[in-house]
Image (cartoon, rainbow, N blue to C red; front, side, top):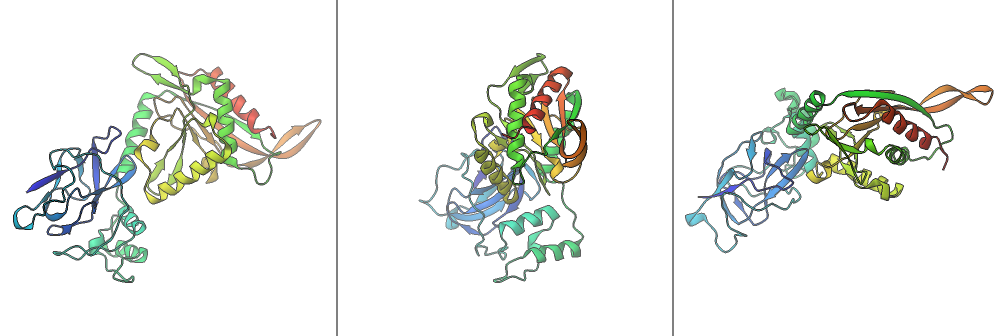
Length: 366
């Protein structure tokens, strides 16, 4: 038997969780055919076969966390082995795979292949449903979303606490232990905004203004040396809500982008979150974060700062408030703002100046 180990997935990742196997023992596979799907820090990656041949044995189970370099399957040798089609040498550690789209083929000889779209497979993972136990009702014995829902009800499966949630829980717990959180709040008068205003782009622009007014909030804090290093670029982490947890992909160097650039990239991130195709690199390196929770509900909040960042700006639900206008009072639309910061690195004055600049930018009509 020749073993195939979990490849180096790059970005300093050391382990992954087996999400699903696309092959069974005894199956014949071809070069680049997807073998299994793994999940690492909120990104799902399909790992292709480096060779053609027959699967001898699967060495890891769905739900198991496997370290890079640990064998996950064995290829048969002897009469079943195929030569001349191996791409590279199989050893203890393989080179990083290329992420490929999930495919469904009729390749199993020992068990029928599961036919389901990526969206159906993703929903089954969220509900903890084993697709091999689901009765298909779609064309060509394809499993549908309705089939998964029926199976979830029948088998009483509950959503699994997958690695995305574990990662989020671990990071939040670490941040809560390490960071000295403090929050300042204010409201921006946005009555002058047009009806077609791109709220997210305005928020990004205002946050840039805040960082320019008080660069210390776009910084990294080293708790060991108790030092603060201001970042040269504003790499903005944008929180995106999903059934699988909160994802925070990063908009790079936003100060040199345009509102069209930001909108296009955010829309792409949202699509990738839905398709479970965010690259691990897109989730790293934020220097400050933005959470527009008001698009769902809520006005003000005390958020969590993820070290080494020192600040996160929260935006609440737009409300109408009485404001003073000249010598009278009028009802204006206002946008609640909550700036949570690490009080080890940022003073109240720094935070207040940052928030003042953000508010001023949001209240301009330009």
